Image 1 (cartoon, protein in one colour):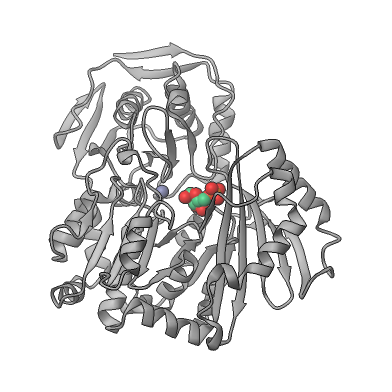
Image 2: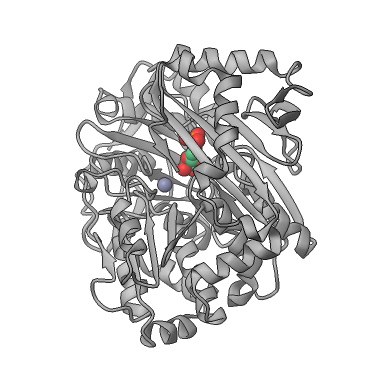
Length: 542
Ligand code: G6P
Ligand code: ZN
């Protein structure tokens, strides 16, 4: 039976960079999740009888919201729901299922790399029929609806058994519980030379993958151990836990420190990698070398043709504005387009749909391609393995040769987390005020060439996104970018992105923070980070 329930709006349901993210207790408020899900449905048109994909990263509260979403989808007139067994679908796998089964869209429950648990983070994201995150016009409509919502619809039925594959009917809608892994694994097999990678691994090449007690565990076990033959134990922390074992499932040098140390040891395996809470981010470390996400994008783009799925070459490369310019040099050499978008995977959707870009990446540990419409952690790892198998060189050798050919973009991001929101907004406002006076100013040897607040004109739908980050470009190609994170759940996070281009191979071995030291000082001088935030050091350096 379908019930229509009276409700009142919550003022804070504005989706951020990647859906609505809040602490679990916020989501547990009466009707909070229901309001947002109904707002999603109310913002959409034409889904009667269509398919909706539902899945999440397995974090605390995942199962509860999945039951709500299924019952609301039935009450709102969807024809079919595909849900991952156990309520599990990694973000890229969800994107693939939406595309493969021509669904109308999908609801992905995740707060990505943020911690999980009863007092930690939860999130709801809507993906459209191309498999990608809803564009701003959709998320704006969802938010607008959430501000006036007065009722939602839900089916009054028993919970669906999420743990057994199969189909059942509720209020005229079919619910099919699907294997979350197999479609995704098939897709990966279609893109990469599994035989070559198997041969590499059976020849003694050692790979380790840290699933960080998050969603990629079952995917990596199936693909890396079962299909590619890596020895048992190559995939670590492979059981998805609702609280990720109490860790941040964020594959960076802070939260995946143990992996980093393993890879820097003298007896290190050949290749180490990790993915985040929902499986879309990646960390890639060769023996003795951490590959920055910006470099990884450039190196993958330069070598992608070595994998069968990309043998015809790339149509173009897209990167977010704060991502380093390393990929630009590859695009230039390949004679293909390079697109610079605002932070947020959703901005790549149009470029991928139109066939303008094949590979995309962000400094925030995201890389992906036109195979789905999300970034994809395991995909990046498999492309690396495919390249390593074909080139028969180590990651370190590949990186060195890459820098020798293209030059090296030294790059680092400094995050100041949980900063007072007023202080952070004040800092950005003060930077905006300086934009017209900065060009021409010198700070030691560094002279400002241009300064602006990045705006993006989407070449496909011509939508304009303003205020996407303050860029200060220095003569010679160095750059400092400031922006506030759109994914945090408490206070503000100031991100400072620092980059310097070094063409000289004799200078490709400098410690990154050292190579950027002068720019780091100038960033503080221009933005007044210390005085405005009271912080003497970043919370996280990546
Ligand atoms: C998520 C998004 C990315 C984005 C990242 C950082 O992972 O999917 O597209 O780059 O968050 O966003 P933020 O606004 O926190 O810098
Ligand atoms: Zn993620």
